Image 1 (cartoon, rainbow, N blue to C red):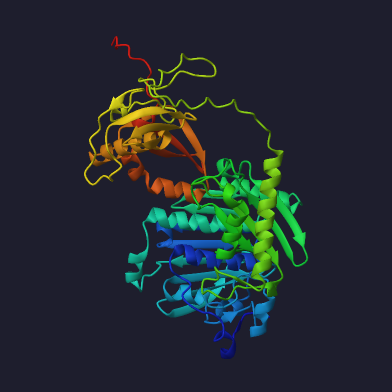
Image 2: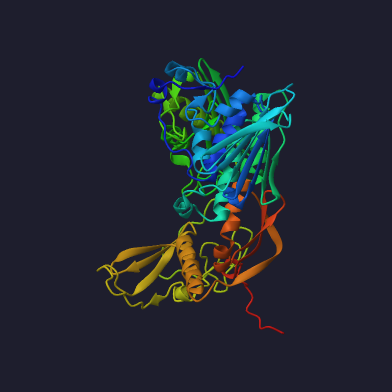
Amino acid sequence: MAIIQRLPEDVFSRIAAGEVVERPASLLKELIENSLDSGAKRIDVEVMGAGKESLRVSDDGCGMDPDDVRLCLERHATSKISAFEDLDKLHTFGFRGEALYAIAAVSKVTVTSCPPGAKTGWRVTSEKGKVTDGPAPAVNGTTVLVKDLFYNTPARLEFLKSDGSERSRLAAVIEEAALANPGVRFTYKAEGRQVLRLEPEESGDAFHDFDMRAAAVLGDDLAGGLLPIDVERPGVRARMLISSFDKMPSSRGFQYFFVNKRPVTSKLLHGALYKGYGEHKPAGKQPVCVVALELNPDAFDANVHPGKREVRFKNEGEIFEIVCGLVGSALAKAKAAAPITIAPAPEPASVVADAPAPAAPSKTNPAPDGPDGYYLGGRGFVAEEFKQLKLGAAVALSAPEGAPAWYTPPFRYVGQIERSYMVFEAAGGLFILDQHAAAERVLFEKLMGEIEEGGAKSQRLMIPVPIDLPASAVRAVLEKSERLSKIGFEVVAHGKNGLHVTAVPALFTRPTTSRSSSTA
C-alpha cells in the first residue's frame, strides 16, 4: 500500500517552503536525509563534474513500491507528515515533500526503488517536464540519479564556485551526515576516485562509536586529545567532543553542531561554546567541537528556514546554560588534571643606562640563535632594519613623515623585560618594543616583498610534514595549491585524507649562527 500522499493546501501553505537547490551540495544533503529517513545502513555517493554533470545516491533503505515511486516527484507529496500538528512530533529529516520536486525542476532525475521481498522494482524519470515510469530490477533500496544540474537555468551555474570548491562542499555534507550517524556506512567517489569510505561503528557503546567516527572524519591532528562529554538529563542528552586549551587550530571550520542528528547552524550554540571557554581561550585560536544534542521533538522548531539548517529552541536559556556549563566544567577538570611544571624564574629586567653585553651561554642562558647575538622572538636580531638597535648605544633614527610628536630620535636602549620586551628612552619618555611582534612583522614584510616581486622563495623540506584533516578541508587546501605555492608553500595529497607539506618559505627556516666563510 502506498504511503506517500499529497499534502492538503492548508498544510503545505503553512510550512516554510523555499528554494532547496542552490548547488550540488544542497541537493546531496536532501538526498542523504531521505536515505537516512528510509532506515539505510549503507549510503553510496558518486559524482562527476563536481556534481553538476551527475550525482548518484544509492542506499539499502526500505525502498518504495510502484505507487510511491510515481508520487515521489510530485510537489508536496511526502510520507513524513499528513497534518500540520505532525511538525511537533517529527522524528525525520525531510518533511516538506518538495525536495525531489525542486531537484527535478532544474535537472534530469531518475529514481529507482524496490522494497525488500518485492519481485520487481520501479523506476520514474523526469526530464524537461516529461515524466515516464516503468519496471526496474529488484534491487533493495533506492537510487536517485541527478544529471545536468541547472541545464534549463544556465545562469545559475555562474553562481557556483570552482569545481574544487564544490567538491569540498560535497565532502563536507557527507562528513556531517557521517558524524551524526556513526552506525551508517558512507562511501564517496568523485570523478571516479574514492574520496571517503567510512565503515559503520557498531561496538554497542553509542559514545564510543561517536568518538571513533569523529576520529575517522576529523583525522588524528584534530581529533587527538579532544575532551569527551556525555550527559543525560530529563528531556536532554548531550554528547560532545571539544578541544582543550593547548590543542586548538586557528580556523573555525571544524565546529559541528547537531540537534537530533540534524546538522544545524546556531548562534546560540556557537555562543554557548565560546562562553564556556571564557577568557582563557588563546588569542587567535578556535575550538574544535562535535556537539550532538538529543531533545524531545517539541523542544525545537526546525521549520524556520527553507534549507532546514537553522533551529529555534523552545527554551533557549536552558540549552545555552547546558552547553556552556558542560564545556566550562570539562575544561576546568582537564586543566586541574594537567601535570604541573615549574618554569625557572625569569631573569630580572636590566634597567641601566648602559646595558652590558649578553652573558656567556649556559644552561640557564642559552646562546642567542641570531648572528648578531640579540634575542628577537627566539630568532635573534637578524633583520637589517634592527641591526642599529645595539645594546647600550644611542641610535639616531629619523622620524617618518606624519609621526606623532613623541616620536623624536634618538632612542637609547634601557633594558629588557622578561626577554620579551625591549625598553628604549625616547624624548623623555619610554618606548617599548615587543620583540616577538617585531620579528613577525619583519618576516611578514620580507615575505610580502618577495611575493610582490613574483613569488616567495621556497625551501624544500628533507622530510615532508604530514597533516591529517577532514576530506573536505584537504580538498579546500589543494584547491588553493597555486596560491600557496606563490607564498612559498608546497602541499601534495597523501593517502585518502592527508596532506604532505614538502616546502615552506625560505624566510621561515632557522638562520645560521655561523659566520665562517664557505669553503665551496
